Image (cartoon, rainbow, N blue to C red; front, top):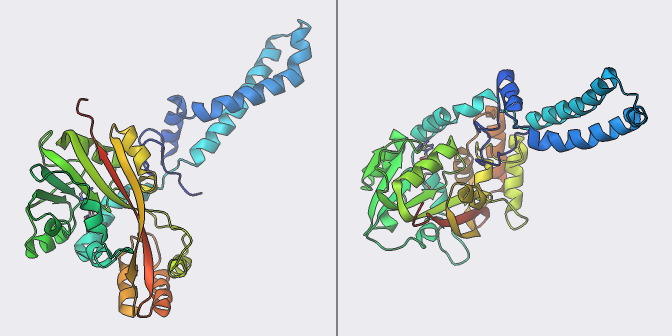
Length: 349
Ligand SMILES: C[S@@+](CC[C@H](N)C(=O)[O-])C[C@H]1O[C@@H](n2cnc3c(N)ncnc32)[C@H](O)[C@@H]1O
């Protein structure tokens, strides 16, 4: 069964409602996490069963202890069944927590890969994703933190800003420095090496669906942003019917998956809701489709290499590469639907 994205975090892993070991599942039941789902079911089913089976005995005033035990069972069994149903949807594979290690290895081996792919995508007006992302950033005096900056593609687009990039991949940061982009600091999104209220804006390009735990990363963003500070985030958006969809369909079919396995699938089109739940005020949430040419087998191979595929067998990855290469030709463009969310912190907490 596919793991649902959690309501609280948009992530598959949530300390409040996901579990891996049976003991953790039992704790969730004891803490009442399943009650919201299971209680209404138990109330309806238990009441109907009790009315049908024990109603006449109770109304006749001849109910004994055993009658009341049966009534209790009528409520308890549906409660347990509904709780099990809820827990089945919240079970997280043990390796879902292995994302940080996978990401660090992936980006150290392929520094600059996101920029290589997205930096050449354009929309109908020939605008690129990174410049679209940065458009709403206010004033130039405040420090802009590029969270999970990778190879720092935003640096050159904000030449006058007091810009700082943070990422945990040494490979990505080395590439940024080699390109003269900085300053950059190696650090984790969930433990930022910055003081409270020290930045005026955070820019988060293509990282929120993969930062784990997302809750902690959002809490850190709030901590380092000054009151009223701005967040601009760029995340993948859902694919809709349109030109170039066939290319993606071939890729996904060869990989044997319906969607890419990000740990925080809710932090895409559902990002505004998650940000509001964390105390941000959402100003805008816009979707725009960018397209990138997949003109030959080389571009097809780069695109497949740019996907996070932690659990996909190498032969499937190879099949996806071949499928996209056979679709590729000069002028053929693959769609990249993206969502830009602009939010800010209240002036007072
Ligand atoms: C898809 S890339 C985006 C990079 C860059 N923002 C861009 O758009 O080109 C995601 C980045 O997140 C970084 N990253 C992932 N988890 C992180 C974490 N917990 N702390 C810091 N960086 C992280 C990776 O190293 C990688 O550079």
